[in-house]
Image 1 (tube, helix red, strand yellow):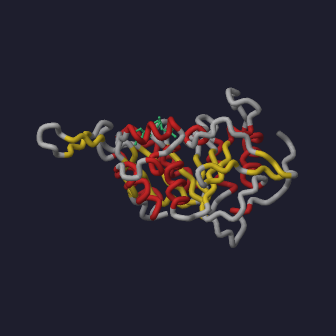
Image 2 (cartoon, rainbow, N blue to C red):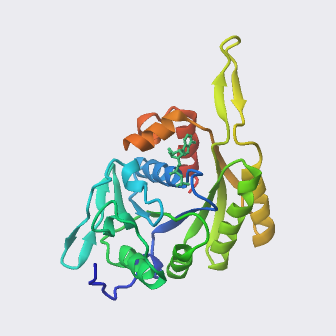
Length: 270
Ligand code: ADP
């Protein structure tokens, strides 16, 4: 879709009151989108005005996680209206495609223009928070968004696996090179809590190993020269997975689950 205007990105203007938080990861499948969606909903539940921009060109799974996989944004004159969903204002790079099953193979400049359009030509209104779901890794989108939103804060999501820590650290370092501040690391899929059928005690099975979140935080602290804390450890939880599949995320539908509590607590610190 053409029609790009030369509007400025409101979130990049001095004096913008919107806190922009980009959620990054080193690789796919670590739960970056799940974390982003649940954080956005937690902030909205606390009465904040929240925009959620799905910039994951490979995944763009945010709409499905909110049950709006087929939603199309409408427009008024030359402004695109974000899709309202569960108290959020949502825009996804997938929504710019004419067909849902189409594969996005945009080159740098077109991708860059699409990102500008989603930031400047979408009528976000006054937001307290804009959450961005980045693609995994350190590609074109991260660079483009780093240039457009140097004031964004970055959360790095990883798993407990040692092998994941290195790529996660790279994603954080990349953000920092774009002058974005890395505010912390989230370790997802940290453990599976199982209640012992005999003694009733809760046991934690560290299915994906141990320490990856802390290692990533320590590595980034050393590299970036400021404290990058491990902010949360979110357990493996079938309810979290099901919530995403069903379009009814866990923080809204099962807030007492330990995974939901960890996410809600993480949100209060943002
Ligand atoms: P990414 O955005 O990093 O590619 P997703 O958020 O799409 O990852 O998550 C990948 C899959 O793992 C999804 O099916 C999601 O429901 C599931 N998942 C993510 N976090 C958890 C968790 N803590 N417990 C159980 N399943 C999870």
